Image (cartoon, rainbow, N blue to C red; front, side, top):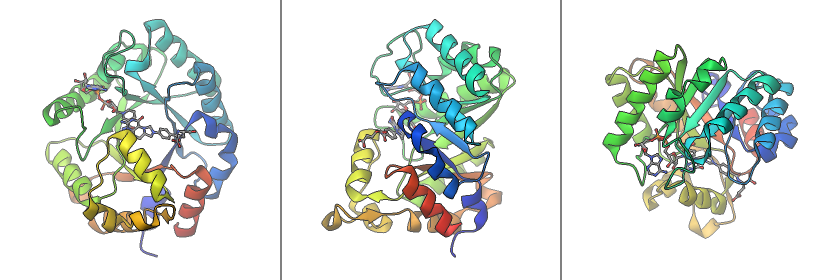
Length: 277
Ligand SMILES: NC(=O)C1=CN([C@@H]2O[C@H](COP(=O)(O)OP(=O)(O)OC[C@H]3O[C@@H](n4cnc5c(N)ncnc54)[C@H](O)[C@@H]3O)[C@@H](O)[C@H]2O)C=CC1
Ligand SMILES: Nc1nc(=O)c2c([nH]1)NC[C@@H]1CN(c3ccc(C(=O)N[C@@H](CCC(=O)O)C(=O)O)cc3)CN21
């Protein structure tokens, strides 16, 4: 076994509202209490998202609903969503992202605006997650990303809440480890959950990489085990997690864990974790 149990043991996982009907599959690889993020996708209703959080809680996991700032159309919508999550699923943790819309659909320009609204703290949210980009973001300058991270951490702490960082998924350990070391050197010591893809077909992984603005060079594809000649074949994060495990040094990288994006389905990721855990 190449991965120490700790890195896989403390992993979290991200689902979509549709996955709420397949939560039984998660228990095969993830312990009770595991944080389960619920992606905020367009085309879902707030009722769907609240029901998903409720099912995650009922299945024995910790629901972590995502809030996409730019997709919110009003302050009342945010109020209603957070109140609903607390009432139905006793939610105490949420993850706030800017969102992919080029222009905000409502009053929230970015994640910071949602945090500064005070609505999360008012409803008793205790922990707030924010996004990290070890390889940068295609539409946001590195300095803006750094400044946003500091501002968001300050605002979360000022509201008396705890923060954590979950990173955009990556196929390469090197930039992730470098970025994490830099963050720690700057004095940011929050838990970082490193985004890794679950096992999925090469085709699916490349489709999500394109959609989410994650670049994959030929060199990185080879390193990860992604082959264009086996486009329909599967690729798992074995080598990536092996490299992270070998490269993570607690004194340098602090509290680092994994966050799985199961692009190939919950069952495949849970079984993969169970086989290696
Ligand atoms: N990592 C993840 O799991 C997810 C990431 N996203 C991505 O998050 C990006 C930004 O979110 P955060 O890191 O939370 O940043 P943020 O909300 O903290 O904003 C950081 C800076 O980038 C600007 N910005 C925010 N969204 C933008 C966009 N779509 N296009 C151009 N500029 C934008 C903001 O005005 C601000 O100056 C979105 O563009 C989206 O691509 C969206 C959903 C999930
Ligand atoms: N820039 C950016 N935008 C995002 O929306 C985003 C990221 N980055 N990083 C990773 C997470 C993970 N995201 C997602 C988005 C959709 C599904 C998804 O499975 N959607 C459909 C299937 C669509 C398909 O297969 O193409 C589903 O039915 O659940 C999963 C994770 C969204 N996220």
